[in-house]
Length: 134
Image: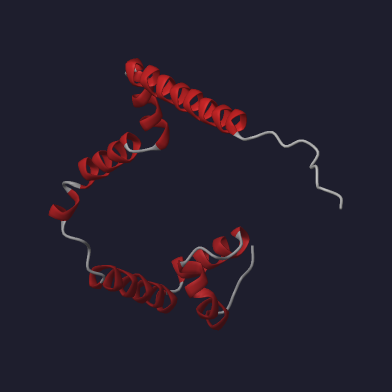
């Protein structure tokens, strides 16, 4: 186990407080602080400073959090209800709408094919042109 001087411990005391040191260094500083009242006071100052900063940070009022869960759940349900997958599933829930869509699409193709065939057969056929030679 290392024996450190007060100056070396005080340089590393903030890292010790934040638990950023290696385990052997943590143990050595813990032992030093246990036996050294000035270093223990410095460590207590770090702790009181941390406590003061935590108290100074304004926590959110507890009444703001009461409806959070229900609000999040209702938004998630609304989003799931309006997704493309849900809309498609709702469209196929009512199959008569699917049959109506298929029938109207088929009727549109039949009408388009009949109009195109009428246009094709109504145009005069042009054979080889006979131009008078003169």
